Length: 544
Length: 84
Image: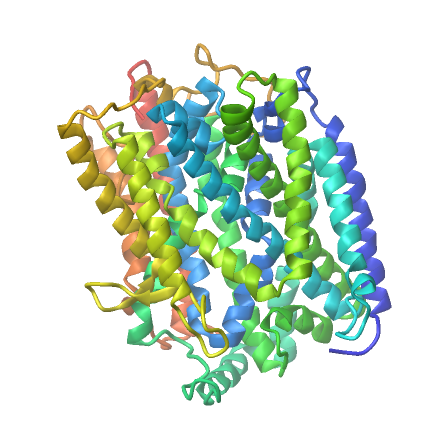
């Protein structure tokens, strides 16, 4: 790292930060509806977003600052294995296309705000709904914490993070300010704030990637040179493991791991509360399907971004903390002012998902813990108030997490979070297509998956960590190395199926299903499904 | 699992089979890692492994678009009937 503060970059960074802060607060007045006090308004933006807003919101939500820092960092560290993010995001869209419109329809019909709302309505089980809600909150918290790690990486490279010797308060002050501001406008504007800021974020990100992918290879002598140097670097022996550092293509040993990680991550992504929140805020089911045809643009961007990891190697970037590789590459390669733009892109890229995630976690708490268990007669106004407060608490918790604990703890938990959230899939996606699964079987399957996943991940050692050293392990019975989350998920499904047979045979009470088959295909405009706001964005609902 | 298509059809039509194939194809292509885990042929210096997967971003987008259009047409034809 260079010494001292990069003044120009910092000034540009602050400029963009102030700009999005203003936008964040003004968002409260954007397309405002009459019924302000309802959770639909604050927590789902009035369920009114059209194709483009949804696109930016989902893109801003799924491709987080941590992604931008971590994916190239993984490539920088080990090569091919880190590229799994690309097939992963390719596989996400056929999945969305298949099941999310059904979730949208049933949620609109019954006013569900969270996935747990749906699970409770479908299976008549508060216990199952609580399991889904707790899993969602647990999985989201470390994810928010990791957004902070993304901001910290940028601040460090700009020289305002301070060194190890700086007083902790001075060191963390910029981060505290950033988060206080974020918390304030999320509180006042709800989901509308990240939706508007996402436009700025993605504009900046696309600009930075487009420039980086052309400008840096030219400076480094073309992709031939870049990959030649990277290949050389990967073939060097790593002192800690005694094996080569990485590879340009996955060897035979790594292929199962690569495929299962891509598939497992793809299945998990839309179990996360924040992805569901962004989806339910869209105006119609057509908006969702249409989005699956334009969202892959982000996957392309992610692929290009991943290639920056190779460029960091070729440019001779040497950092102890892989997370700093890409910010450092920007600092070394770009003129100061454009480095500032790039840092702003990453920094704002952290704010959007952090806002959506805290809203999603808050909604889960309010709907499925507060209303279901603590205060069943809560009015919509009370729900909104609780949600707003919890969104603050969640952020403070994430902040405390990052400031008091080692970064690796947040990363470990995020890894666990992915494994955990996948275990809610049988109840949620299964429930969207069939009522055959028994609610108790689903709870049992969830518990088995959670326990297996946690224990298995705990047992993975790496050269630097005794536990939680990775997310892959030998798959029992197959003998290949595979993603733990997917193995746990398969176990989970097996338990659910077997127990459902048993419970149905002994006629265990199945619970009341408040949904009907036609609910899953209802679209905006159908009886009982209202459109809150007149369409205000491009693209009229198609298919009619 | 992921091979589900929306089509829980009252009738399996050719269009719906095509929709299903469009949605399943990316899974086959991407999970079959050994089919693309190689360096050659390179494209402007980028190993096959990387450009092939990025190419699949475009291919799968095109496939999803086809599925979307066919689905719209299917739904329009069945308007009034319940299916999704």
